[in-house]
Length: 409
Length: 216
Image (cartoon, rainbow over all chains, first blue to last red):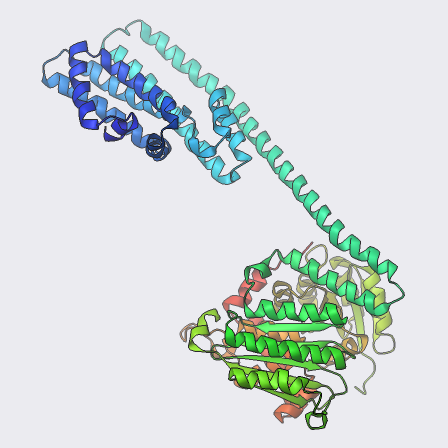
């Protein structure tokens, strides 16, 4: 009652008192007027923000509204009976049932504000199947299907309640008599028609679903085609033009391979953007592109890119750059990073001729300053060592602070 | 490798790739046959009984995993080396758990591939740096004592060290030098890790093995 009162913008207490008095005076006519008013009023009051807000959850819980209406009618009728007015059981129960069913049906056919512009069309068509198809283009298909089934159930129950109420009323008033056979006949006819129509309706729903799936598929195909055209085809054309420059061709192929893998992986990497692993990979990719070298990156674990991780990343980038400039052949340059609970370790290894840190001229301070110096300042360390079999490895280690332990899985 | 050249069967559904691999391996292994479908592969392998099968992971009709499964019924000792363009964890772990002794990507050089084949023939395992990374990742987290089978679900400190060096791009002999152990010991560690990889019930492994997205 309170909900209904708020709905039409009147204090529920006032409404209730007024309604009871009115009903007594008019001998029940107001009851009918009320039901009609309840159904009609919300549609007119759509502009009102308050009404909207209250109606949204109500429409979704048709069952609750229906029960409320049923109980409301029951209470009113019982109240009248207490007062000795001419209601009998033969009228009370059918009316309650009918009110319940009618409320269900009204909730069922009322447009749903949440589905935006599709709703008015569905409402105008008055056909649940059409309504479902309209929403489906804008909403998630499965949730839509479930909502549609729930809708259907509500509709069927509503119809059954109303019919049942009518029959109950007729039979309990002995109006039925000879009509009973006719009523039975009509019930049979209704059931038969339902059985006949059911497969058609089902098929209609199926066709709509198939059509929708087909549309989604062709859209996907178009998207894939567009992607391949912009990326792979372009690269292949470029490679043909540059066929005389093997290094350039290899670099192009590598870059395209990377992009295609990323795309196939479906944006897993974008999700972890801003983390150490992703940042290290993109640093390696940039050096691959800029210097036409091959870099293989293996990362174990991940961590947010805090100040310490940033330092390790910067040093790793310098080490990579150094390897790319001086020791790219024979490739590939390997990067291995392990992010443990306590420390971040990065190793950059090449197979080049190698160099002795002690013999590096003082003016070429690149390695000493940009890698070792940077790590020491940040509280970590870095060392450059020759690998027995040839090549150089730069090892970078830094402890993770307590604040940066969140990334460990 | 002073013994005669290893015999090999190449299984891949791309003819271009088969001939590429074949020419790269020229003189280093003896290619006994090629196959491009699962069915054909099982037939050729059982007929030729090669030392090592070079196996593509992605193939119509179940992929490399299916070939291993069918061959294992009649020839359980057959050695497989998986060869793939994909380095996604799902693919790698699935084929290793099916029974492959190693995994390399198709970008590997002919020489390295021949060396890997030789090692597989000798009963060792072949780990690419990336596979080592996957394994370290999978065995990284602690698992509750009660559920853990220490024999299978944990790596020893030494195994971890070896895997880490593999991930850093070290060859077995470099690892041996670095850790001051013999190359044979390195191989034993790697084989032990492979066994754990194939038998462990660690969640990450079974998940990777289960949702392998093999493109058919």
